Length: 162
Image (cartoon, rainbow, N blue to C red; front, side):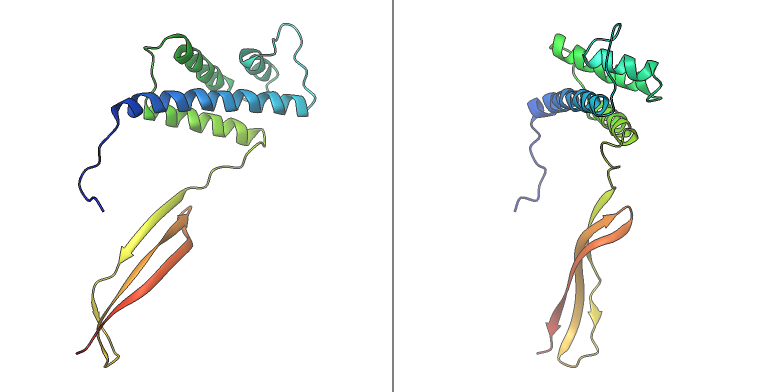
């Protein structure tokens, strides 16, 4: 097992946030199309059956309050596709993901992503009440969901008396 600093792939660091922003915009576009069709909304003039037309229709029909955020995501996607020098950052990706998720939650297409935290703990060495065991230590790791314990794996390590 390597304990030192890991190598960072500069190309991956530059490309991945942008590619994920493009993919997120595509997922949003497809989801809006599905939702509009399933709920009986038909895009007629002046709305075109494209990403911009869907967002304009949603905004004009007051189906979603924050449609300006959706336009910003669409414009970013277009900039990434049209200009190879334009790139996204991890922070911009995080903002886009939150906006996309909020929209999809508002339309009932997904549920809010739970906040998962992973943990690993090791207790201090403690003396044991058992005469055969000199010291004991507890190890555990697991997952917390929205701050509450969802899964825990734990065990004790015992050091025996000689």
